[in-house]
Length: 284
Length: 323
Image (cartoon, rainbow over all chains, first blue to last red; front, side, top):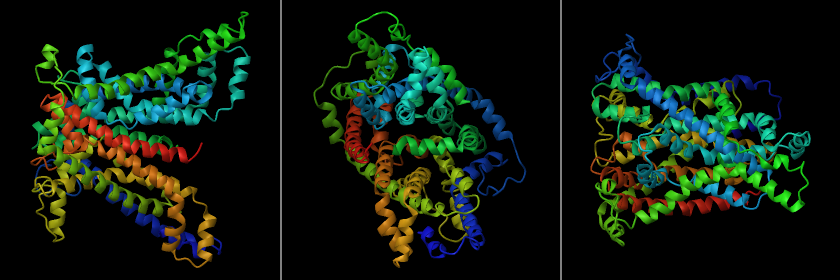
């Protein structure tokens, strides 16, 4: 709506435009402030000495780290668990989906199209349905309450997405490049590792980033595939924390801040990959 | 960080390619071709096996489970006798199913409409050129990236009737200030929808923004030369051009909203008095709280059925886009 109001001015060279543009920036900042207010409030509450009172100050006056101290004491191991599980899930996810994406993009195999179709379908299976069936299988296989079991389940959140994303990238690798490497005597596996993977670096990073975020954010598998406290990621930790510490909002919010840090860090470090992942994984 | 794990992890999983040596030995062309294909399947096989185990198997297993009698003791005895359609009739006879279905519809439609409208408005806004556009646009993604459970818990604090910042803010500006956001049966679902709209805005915005970039600028100029108003141009030029992207956004939004679990559990646990129970949470309640996996499977199957209808729709749209 707002874009088009600019258009009548278009014939004139864009000299007097900058003045008006700052108005849009101000409006953009306001939108951002409203959108991010809940996250600001999370940080603010975490830093307040009396976070459970009615009138929480709009800015933390006396900064108080006791919430963070108790959050780290109570949830530190769960944060490490999340990190370990998420990194494991990323490794599994990329190890399985990168070769598959390459195969589906470059080899002319019968059935490839069906597999690509299947990959799209799997992205639509509700997670709770998977958990429902997986639980009894996990009980039989002894995978309940295990790191490896949770990594595998969490990898399933990223694999279809990663295949679709990397495949749509690898389709555009010219066949001649791959063939040239093979003519030089490199085997198919070596060609894949030394030529295809480096060329696909950006899509690998994007896929890895998203499978990390999916696994880090996972709550459902953490909740359903664990019956003891042996493997407790931070998402499950916080959920149980509010049950027990509902009066101590400072610690709960501090734990929330810590669990949101990876998302914030990844966003700042790799904006372009994140934007590419959101659009690439869905539209293409 | 993820790039290093990526390159470190990938090489080890590769099967040795038998075809590498095939060129040296004199083999018949047909056998060579078969060998080559076998080696090529080696790249794809792990993914196919994984997806069969983690998606195919659960789909089949859920159907079987919905005809079995599960009780908490099943996991000790291993016995889950078949009981015909008992689970199905039990689930349908229980008033909770209808309630959850209706609430799922309200939740999904409400969330989609809110996310889409606000996301589109923001996408249009950010299509203007102005300083810091890119930075603001990427920071707005944060709510989408934070784990959903965490968002739920933060909002639970904000919504608190007596000590939450929302009510104290509304009280200060003199409208209300005493709303039981999450604790009244009439408000809880609305509150959950509001939070889900907040979570979904960035996703809608990013995809629609991408779509808007593809709309040729000349069309806008032509329309305005013809004397079309801004609104008219948007409605008659931009929206029709965006149609494929809009369909994708809505279908994907639908798929992720209809099955939601994390957010509801973190905000309300399905309460008060089941007023925020959805098909997703009901599946969870049946299976993992009541330990009646048969009943959980019934609700899960219905959830799959609903998703499947939209999956077909999505795939048709995807195909029409043409590759």
